[in-house]
Picture 1 (tube, one colour):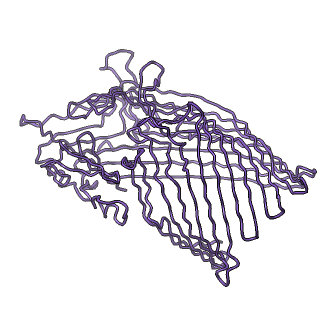
Picture 2: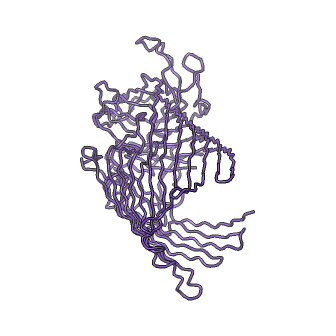
Picture 3: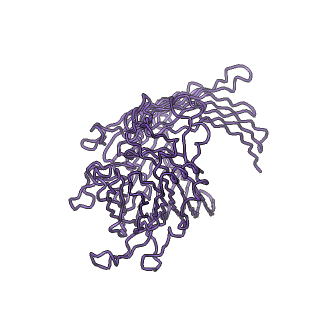
Length: 637
């Protein structure tokens, strides 16, 4: 599965092709029972599942140094390159480096669950049914990447007797040095741990140009062909062809088994350290009582209940400290791991989540009111709880393109779940059997929420006075969101003939937010307040549907405003999803109860998803899948 990319970094221009070997396996086993006797119903469920995500990624990167290369952004925020005289992405003589990269990793997940639910019908004037039950769940997740670490320094400052375990990652690099005027090729670098399988060799200008010419091709198809909202972009560009290039590089150390264990510098086999290893155990129980009565001669029904949930996490990760050293060639550098260690953290928390819901016909069968109140929580993804940290000393130096402060990426074992109190009011009017008009009002008082990828500048990560710019998940504290939702549903049964199967659905939502004092998320780029993550001020859906006899059809348009994603780009700037609207359609013909034929079209408006770094002139990504069509024949036994 090749992916082609152009990249401009620190005065260099690169073009690359990526090849994937991906295998996903999943296994599920589930059993259960149902029991009924008199007023009692019991349901039991046991299930187990496991999955493996195996990936071996290969990349070929061709690089040229182009002093004076200019990059300009157009009014769409898209880059345009102007190369200096004597340099061109299509000229093999412009390139100084070709590199093959091997990046294997594997993720394994396992989950076991047991669940027991009881229902008991009551014969009381107020309560008519009692629900209660319990659930237990255990989830395990682990990931191994390339690995590589310092196994022992033998308790001394000397490095000669250090024991390293090599990484499974491989870089094989062929270089031409245009500044070498000695008439002799430079010697290859001596491999160092943990990147022991990083190798290079130098060639002359003619050999480099011949290599580039032999491995180069063009990107397949037409770049953004058929998409009219992007202008003045190239239809294609020079890119390496992986199958042509791989023969020129040393691939003898491509070994996926090294992800799990590798031979250390002392000749002994050592296990690799997982990127993360997390176990989450959840115990939950609930009780709910349904009621049905009359108040002021009006039917009143609903439920009250409480749910308990207890969560325990055990997370293990690698703390790694790396030193970045400039090579003296532009902003190029080498990274050397100087220390690492395994860190495990246990955490646990408990939540009691009461709730209540009530409904009443204010005008029988015409005008209903619904009220809802409840506490809710949602756990963070378990891989975000890993106590791993990877910090690079020297990454802030301007000699390697840094901004003055060294960088870290880190998990967050202290991450709290999303917690909120929801309040809902809905007014529903049914003037006829074919019409529904609804106005819903909702409020979420949020105690804590999760920002998946945030940049904390100048953070004292290890509480030792050393400051880093840290990228990783964090909690936001204190916010309130409010909104109103208006809905109209109309079946057009008054139309004559076949048209009586038509109907309309329309929905509009307006939302706003407010942070608690002193808790606002701040844009590090300009110091302004960020909107609440994932919140669009306006969104709406409009649909025309048809359902009569064997034919069912629907055309729907969905729109939402621009919103802050809660993530950050590579530069640490918050990312925003630009406004978007999608038109989908589906028609279905039921031949009989067992055979159905359907035709579906997705994204008929040809909408792209565009993310930016806070301005339409700082576009991060334009993702366009085009229109998609599906023809499905469904047969049931």
